[in-house]
Image 1 (cartoon, rainbow, N blue to C red):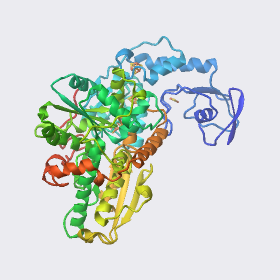
Image 2: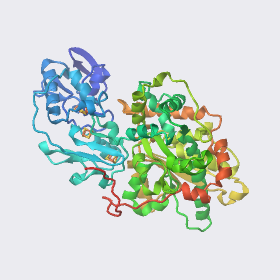
Image 3: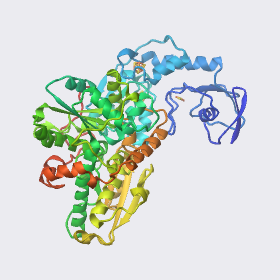
Image 4: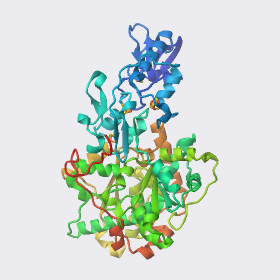
Length: 600
Ligand code: SF4
Ligand code: SF4
Ligand code: SF4
Ligand code: FES
């Protein structure tokens, strides 16, 4: 620990702290804007300046290390005046159209202006209009960008994708893909991690709420909603509930009050995915062990940001991907075929809405591969943030809603489906089913959790030895199944390099595009403490799993009843509706004529 003086008071702080961290440690608030806890700081906004005795200039507290004996002042007139000037310069070429801005009342810039007591801007000057860049998933309104570079850090250092960087210099600086290309024309994964950290209304998901309101108000439409596993531990935060609050019953109740005709749970389709993907995996392993040409390792395919990343970055390795569509698009395909027949409604009159913790899923649904019988599997994707906005607009008191159930016959799910929302969950769910199908015995881990792949490490691996399998699976006797799990595109890149150079030791790999998985997907609520939010949401999803009587996908009675009519997993109907193929893309989409640019 080191000794410091802050605002005249003797204090201590851990060694290696920055001045900002030392202040925080002692409960002293210093305003910040570009700063983000836990990741590299650029120190670009200078809002966090403080006075340090013996130093002539004010110091940016978020990047300057505290030192033994330092004397720091955080709120002198000189400091407060400097912060105000910094702020006024920042907003001098900002489009201050707050009333019609998506971040109105949740904008960090607005809140900071209030905190600093800024009422006017003395430096109104020339503005650059860099326009608006719209794709089906991401929208960039560059007139709102304050050049804080949080998105640059996340895109380069967390995801390792390197799409967003500062282009040009001085007044002409703009945060953009290389050559200021529209983001829909480059190899952006559309993961949306940059939208979570942008403090203002520049980077955001492309709005789908208007399309959903229109459908809800169209009496000709049967509007069916489904909600992904991780939504239930995120949505409460939109209404001030603590990180990770389990809101499954309230969520079903809110969706019903918004006017959806059927309120289903994507968890049902997560269980379905396990039967399809597990069957596919066993088929591939059997082929590989008996002289066939099946490709291993097989890699999960439910994360569309990851899919876009591999299509751009490793286009020659697409055969490793499971052919399973993501759970919500499988569900959409079933709703507009099997379920449409059951309820006797023409699929053209069905409008499927997916509530997702994800931005990339907005892009996924416009892919031509995600259509059957001429209809898109899913018509609109709402992020958790957008759903929160719609519930507020409708005046629904979310916090005090009673718990309600999802609708049948496609609303029931097992605990295995809940953990689809966290890193390691898809693999664990698959192993719970595959191991039991192969051996007739339950997976030999306490509470069914495959301990080596639990947690938030970037890459996790485990080995499961198959002993005394059932006669149909004798080819697996003694085989050690090696699995790996990663979340975030940086980890995915590491595992893919191994595959590309022929050194991957694994049979089965789970990849989720966002660090931690869907619990901290690009469409989840923005948070002040992402690490705490990630940890709490993870624990609560595991708790949701453990609260269920049925915890293995192959035990879901509604799913088994469905397969009675549909046919077997990976059978003919499944191949037509539930499986897909992938598109090799180049760095700037040059291998395809597709472009995801709507407006630039
Ligand atoms: S980004 Fe913030 S300050 Fe700028 S217009 Fe939107 S709400 Fe207002
Ligand atoms: S969506 Fe993901 S890959 Fe694309 S710019 Fe944002 S962080 Fe980078
Ligand atoms: S787009 Fe948002 S996060 Fe990126 S530099 Fe601009 S204001 Fe900051
Ligand atoms: S918060 Fe420290 S420089 Fe921006």
